[in-house]
Length: 102
Image (cartoon, rainbow, N blue to C red; front, side, top):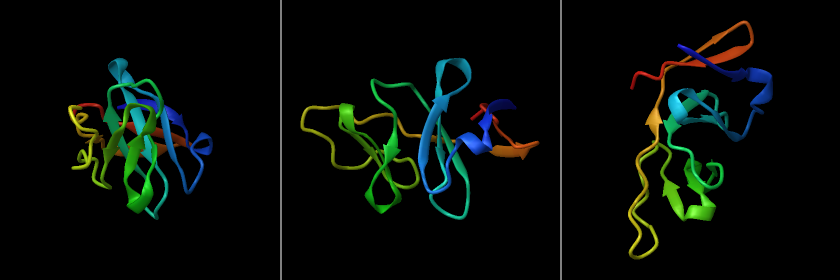
């Protein structure tokens, strides 16, 4: 397990990208009742919330649905981004931890 950030640094109702293990980033989704985390490669701008509960990296034209699957709509000629990989989470002493072994 790897410590990601204090839970207080991850605002409720938002999607936040933070540095993660092994050169990856962690996308933390606190929009619903359940806190979720995904691992992905870093990009030229952070992953953000998108309509319908999905995700977007607007500067790269990348979109994912709410499960982290690349959206069917991508710019013509552009390869879809890799899926956002769901990561198991644990909360302890006000800190968010993820299991990067997925």
